[in-house]
Image 1 (tube, rainbow, N blue to C red):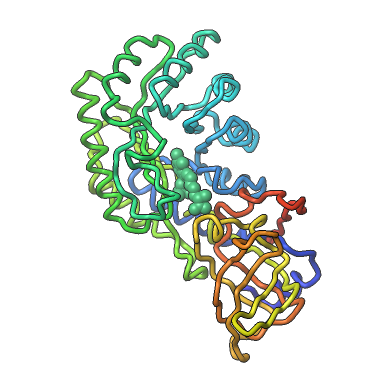
Image 2 (cartoon, rainbow, N blue to C red):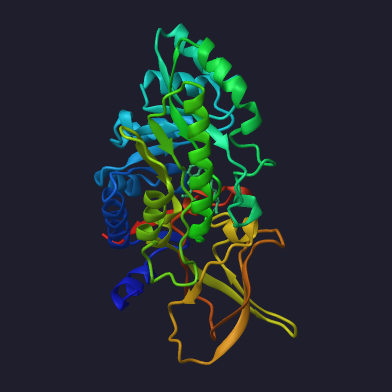
Length: 383
Ligand code: LLP
């Protein structure tokens, strides 16, 4: 994946940093755009996955909308040229300040996550003499078969409105004159690779839209959320399976004339476009364990520590043919959990070697922290 010139370039740079391959990013975006356009589907980029300014500019240039979960994301989306008519705003805890900001920005749609939120948005919109467009985020109780920390669509999760509360939603919508109902929204989890899960989601969406229609509400927007997974074990096989993903929805979603189908993809668009590049600081050879202590840790990429997530680790200073050793690859942070992976087979490694932690473009840089008063991780681009 990394050619000699790139590795030579890395040698000159201070580590750790995120390396963005903008070519991979563009190829991924093109694959998604072309697969979605076959069916006229609308794709919003879930900004939470990566809001690096350069990444946002590239994504915006492909014509995607933006899916935001904070007022600052709404602001950044608009500043980066995502049209306000393509901005959606979800989140269980939108503050009044954030709602006001989104109202002032005239965004396309609020994805509303509780009955109480409907009344609050109505009041704030009324005070501004505006009409807020809303979709109801429904918790469909569909199992995403992914890590339980990134499952969102089960009854036990805090997200969305449970189906037993839908009569209250209808009552609120009838009462709230400053709201315009656009449709229904779902998001059941992340890193989903089993297309059967999406088929089940389609069945639930069809039931839900029938329910709303039966209660006299016309649905214009069906927003299915995001969640499409990527192959963390094959970082060079880097285009997510957009074809199969959109095909499932085209086959199983009951789309009525005039309806729009919306998606909110994050990970699948950006994950494979970045690696975290780090240097080996120390090699500790013990009786039970060999440790490679890197200059990057959970402050730069927290996914392995938070979700037991797998990221392929490569020593890009050595060739595969060299003698291999099993290492626990750890960071410098004062926490035992600061370990990228245990028992990784790598070429024998030395202080100063460069390691690439792959598939780090989604939920990597954006989840970095300053814990231990560390420097904020930098970014380097292929061009
Ligand atoms: N829409 C909503 C309402 C969401 O909450 C999310 C992600 C997405 C769309 C985009 O999902 P994606 O296509 O990226 O799977 N930090 C975790 C993932 C958290 C996902 C949060 N919500 C991780 O590193 O795996």
